[in-house]
Image 1 (tube, rainbow, N blue to C red):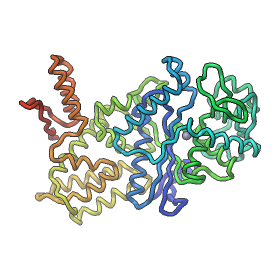
Image 2: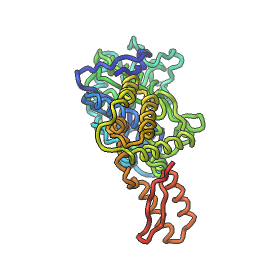
Image 3: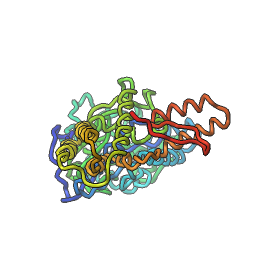
Image 4: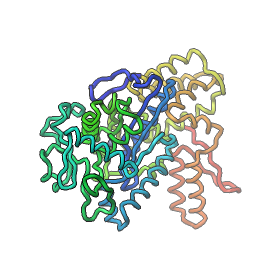
Length: 448
Ligand SMILES: [Zn+2]
């Protein structure tokens, strides 16, 4: 497979460090609020990339961390009057629950910053010993100008390198370019850990260097995350590992584009967010997955009605063709389309181009007079975690649609017909029609 590498700015062959195995580390969420659909994009992209690499016969280890010690968590906890530990634990549980609903399985490891403090402290000690970090008043800072390759990943000019850190820290730094590895405990922060520099807590960037290396070793295969993390987060992760170990953190840096709403990146700070759990309630996971696959992972993707409607229609079309297919091998003359599908994924994980080949396969299947074997389509959909669409082809509604129908039945029972109508519309939007029957209700797939 070939993949775009942000560091070299080229599409390069993926050559695993350990033959037959691929290690992927993707930066996960800071758990201070429920995640939105934009936060779900890297989860979907790197889970599906892992599935594809497994299809190609590689053994994949996927690591997605959770940042559970952070300024944002202290601030959000203070606002709600809970402890930062309780808030982070609740939001970590909500994150797992919400992403479970994507039905992509869990990453192999989901390390927490709060459980990796020992490794983080050791990492910082090494950086201090090697002259790459210094202690001031219980804080520890990374000396950016001590790393000759600093900036090689993000390729920014020095005057574009704002670390985005607080003002108090700025007075302590030798150089405004430096960034925090460890922060001394401050009044108002309700968690702290012992360290050789006094009680405090880790900076954000060092946790990823320590946790990634702890689970995958250095120079592992793919470091992933949203392109918004390129600077300062990934630049700093790369600098820390290079300086502490004399080795690169990762061989390939792979970044997904942002999800946008109203032509702005979806972000809590902008206020244009759609929580993942609400999006899943409304559209169902099949539509959400197909929606993400409709755009190349490196491109921005618009969270808008039109692409979602297209994805929903696509889900319905796949269910429909599934009802016509037979079990067993597909006709050999359709094999080139299947090959084009996998070749597209092998060339920088081009899901839109792969889907184009798949839709051509579907059109061909629909054109034939007799039913054909569905093995090829099943194999293609399985890599995108959508083979379930063929399983449901006997007319059984997916669980999220059944849940909507149950909620509608309840609304009707309590006389809330307005809500019942809203739910009917949502059921139809998911590709199903609900009919009231003696036993309760019946769900019938909508033909499109
Ligand atoms: Zn990270």
